[in-house]
Image (cartoon, rainbow, N blue to C red; front, side):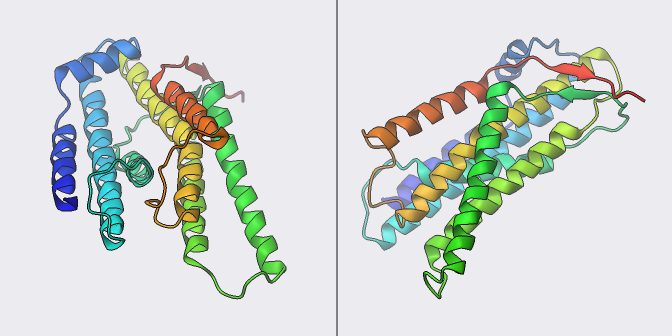
Length: 258
């Protein structure tokens, strides 16, 4: 059954990772109030194609890992798991950003691309990483245990990936704007803003999800969402992250003095 689930997920991901259809291009343009032209059209299509391909691939990889772990523990039924597929999807988001072509010919203008909610979510994720690192240092200094457990390794990897996401966000945000026609500049800022908001909004969700999966073992022993206070808070975090990642936010251009 796990093989069947993997095959179905892989087929859906393969379909989702194909070339973006015209309606997908039109939705992106309408969302960001862009006019698609011969100059900026290829940039938008390349962005949509690359991000969809890697995100879908990461989602399937996470689902396959979950199913493989589930099978080794005797779980053969059809189930829905949030943790591993999301973790894979978010890693795919990060990889996609490193695969996107970066145009040349930039001027000295900088763009403020992150909204308030995105900045808060990203900052909270980085603060969570610092807190996890401090707890690890204190645990080692107190001599709580002499060996490193798999859970600690998993949590360390989650912190490392989240910190890498923060560095990637800084890299994207620090890029000066493209020099060229206004429609091309607007398209580049739109795709960078969307990338930043997806990365920033998902960082805290990634860290919390990875910590939950790591501390609960395989993540298959209990449902990912439970009706209690932590579960409701996590649902609230998901809602805020979804709202932040899918809404267009205003972009402000500034030119450094001097």
